[in-house]
Length: 223
Image 1 (cartoon, rainbow, N blue to C red):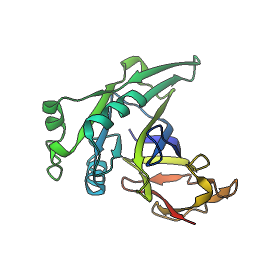
Image 2: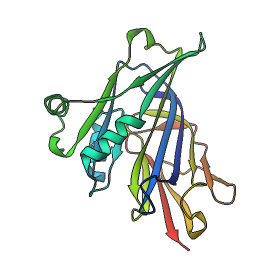
Image 3: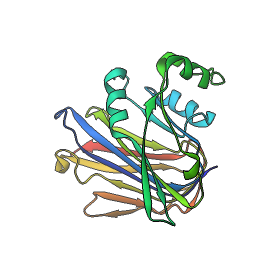
């Protein structure tokens, strides 16, 4: 099932690791039917695109090439959650990810020959059958740490998605007054994005189907 009625939120803020890092926060609210939810973690844009198009993962995270996978995986597992909301009963259930073993990862990537299994990690969770209904709304939320030297941050659609809006917030980025932000869309067509709160928030009212590989680049330069 594709992701329906999706609202995507990307935030850039300060990191607890210090001035050489910043935190990329991600939140996506959508409707779908999911049995297994997988997140692929790679360290190159090439592997990210291949993984997205393959349909193997429901979401893809791209780490810095210099990243220590062991350190970053631990942080990602601790922060990422999938919350399932029962819209009829007004209840919600939070589900936690765990990392797939080396053998499981290789089996999952069997048909994706372009990716070296040693350069990819996968975290996944199982959605209980009772929660696999269209009456439920899913919320995927998490964060990752990126180096300040990375001047381009991007979000890429991992699968077929009908997106309502894409929101980008850089209000809390470290030393915000020293940076100028802009966005570049590659969504199949260009939507009229609005800029709010002194250039701190960008809102793209997509209201359209997005294909794997579509997305947005958040660019910044020193002023």
